[in-house]
Amino acid sequence: MSSEACINRDDAQRVSVLSEALPYIQRFAGRRMVIKYGGAAMVQADLQEAVFRDLVLLRSVGVQPIVVHGGGPEINHWLSRLAIEPRFEDGLRVTDPATMDVVEMVLVGRVNKQIVNGLHRVGGRAVGLCGSDGSLVTARAYGDGSRGLVGDVAAVNTAVLKPLLDAGYIPVISSVAADSNGQSHNINADTVAGELAAALQAEKLILLTDTPGILRDRHDPDSLIGQLSLASARELMASGVVQGGMTPKTECCIRALAQGVTAAHILDGRVPHALLLEVFTNTGIGTMVVGSDRHLDPAGDGVR
Image (tube, rainbow, N blue to C red; front, side, top):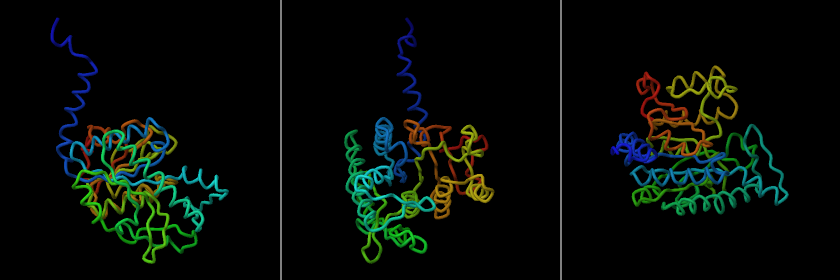
């Protein structure tokens, strides 16, 4: 029997994948990646486990992941239990003081620690924070303040993160932050992730969503745009190709890239191990947005 016949096919495939990933591991070792964790990947147990393992693997090969999370379904669940009716305007949760209490309780005290515990369970080391910790994020009222305690990012101070990253921890950050008067605000997690990525000069901003990425036809999942430049992303928004819930995510990517982030990715978190597929394979699975056309690969499968 030849030696080739003795090799298990699964083992051979596993080694092949590791070999393909090597150039990406070498390139991204020591680099920071900000990952917005949300959608189905936060709800389904198998997807949660896949994300936790992906994050710990990234940390284990030298990448420095920073996780930012929301928790809309969990907030709605607790609002319902407390007989507080959720209200939304233009996709934003109207946040009166009672709702803010629930948001802070759920995001900071419950969801954040569940993620930290999940990372520990698969062998990682994580520390849970919110925007208020170490003045990591300073909030301001969103727009004209008519939506209550909905916030925007006024300033970012990354000093509290750097010692944690240097010591090998994965920071897990909930999108609650106080303003200059100490009043807590509820900030969109995509916004917090984008501003943190910019402040950290991250290699990548990655948004886990419940869609394949940016589609040329939002009714056709096969029309996924694998990569595009910052200018092209702006054109797609202006022409109406990007609309609905994808608009704030694309805006978040554009803003991060304009502030120095190398690449932004919108991924389908419903795909197990979406993070590793995007970061460590030749083709990736979602939409990658880069600063200029010169960063695009003509074959459409550039370094992701």
